[in-house]
Image (tube, rainbow, N blue to C red; front, side, top):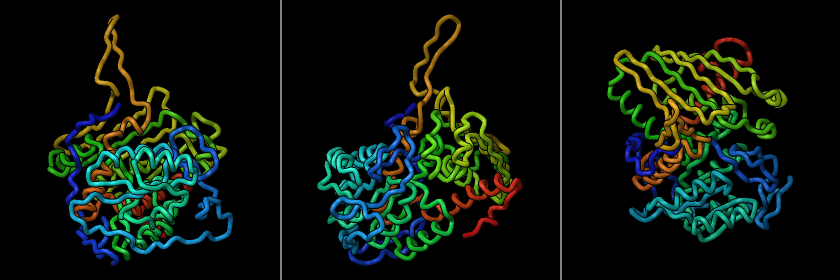
Length: 419
């Protein structure tokens, strides 16, 4: 299931305008599958998607604020990113399942050093600190952002907290890597993107499929002209395990939560989309209707360059994690698909047997590591990482266009979706 750990095919990261880091000053210029996150003291489902956050951030004593304003840590610039060659000091916000995955990956990157870990569950925060070999753990993410030596933050918290934490980190002058999305609302996303632009800090969003070796190779082939004029795009994603109903209430719907990864790939591999026509239904799991969501969806895409595409999405796949992408052009096509987890096939009795990936953590293990390597490398080199703030905004706009098309039963031009 995992891509080879020693894969050397990495993204071309030479994009975006550069910026310079100076201690105590704003940074001129601008930058460019979520796991269970436990940024809530309530228990979370054991499955692999983030649980909705309806609680409150703890105050500095570790208690929830519950309507009262907690004491604000000093979020002025406390570190420096001007030390060429020195490891970047990182605070990891969120120490749930995916938080631990990112901690392990960061710990293996020579250019990074985890300084602090934050999680409102003290046991989770301390476990993350021990795993990282970090100096301190905190119940409050704001304290971690302001901790001495922190130059960058990695946000692995529930969706509902992303916008607030990105803004706090940006105003504190920290480089930011965050799980997608910034927010589920276009206006709030645009507001945070503007803040990031004003502060000039680098921001990278966790669209990890862009860093998978197969998609990197596909992108290179397309940009080289090897496929000729692009004519068609097709992407299919089927999750192995349906999420619990409580997750669905805060996820934003099948287009914003799940199909968004393939919609981002459509923009990444082919270009901007002009118009969409989308459908969705409850075909396998009646409980999805309870949350006003769907388990099956399809979106037709018409790209600005004239190409056409289709995105198929399903929230259940009893045979295993099923991810496929195809881009076809006038001169050739490229297909990205990992059929087996293990590079071994057992043959007997005129048949054969292999295994499938179980879910996104094993299918995209290499991509999860590569996206953080790209972020740390960009910060060291003083250039904008990608995918950045504008990618977050435009991919969300595209997903919202699909959701509107489904809801209104008509084709929707992406330009109709405005903040």
